[in-house]
Amino acid sequence: MVGRAELVNLSKGGALVELMSRPPTSQPVWICLGAPHPVDYVQGRVLDAAIKPTGEFLARVDPNDLRFRFGREMGGV
Image 1 (cartoon, rainbow, N blue to C red):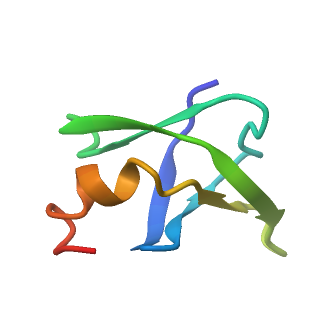
Image 2: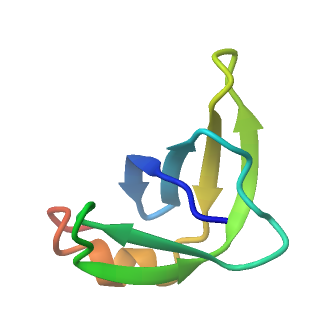
């Protein structure tokens, strides 16, 4: 499944992303920055997901690799 997501927040606690469909929680997810021409990809794991009243989903992604790979580009974490 490929889906577009918006990065809502990136912190030491992980990444919060908003998606149009429910993210997989039983398999790794890949996140990239720089759409439509991605700069880099990182693998993550969805820790939990919740549906918003508007129908979109919010997902919290495991920060293990995200902090180190995207931290500098996002102004440091």
